[in-house]
Length: 154
Image 1 (cartoon, one colour):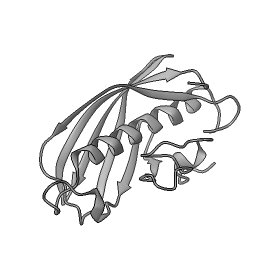
Image 2 (cartoon, rainbow, N blue to C red):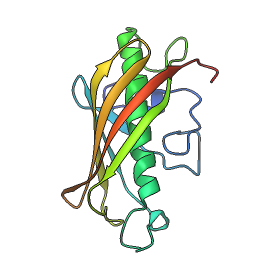
Image 3 (cartoon, rainbow, N blue to C red):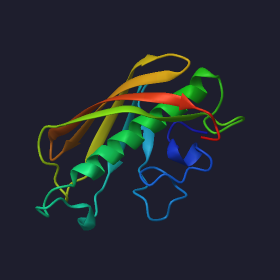
Image 4 (cartoon, rainbow, N blue to C red):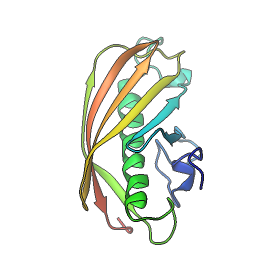
């Protein structure tokens, strides 16, 4: 593992629509560590990810990429806290316990969306994070997220 290897590419058997590299029809987001408690992701929308007005990114897609970016951050952090490389040994999984998205401005469909997730708090069972999505140089959405540790067979 390297710090510049996408977190999602290190998580085994991940078929998630938003972040799973094993889902060929999914969004295929890629997240990277940017310091101890922060990760970054750049998502390039496709035209079919549009909202009603075709120049803007659909709000459900925004929520999905924010959800997946933060939950994958929690998974990778779980491995870090266990002193293991992401994806090594027994699986560590987290799932969304809370996703509270605040839409602040429309995100442009023809601009990459840049996401930053920050870990605020962690316990053995949950990780609390915030996420910000920027597009066209402005903050378009923010999210408060609780990722909850789940059994590896969930």
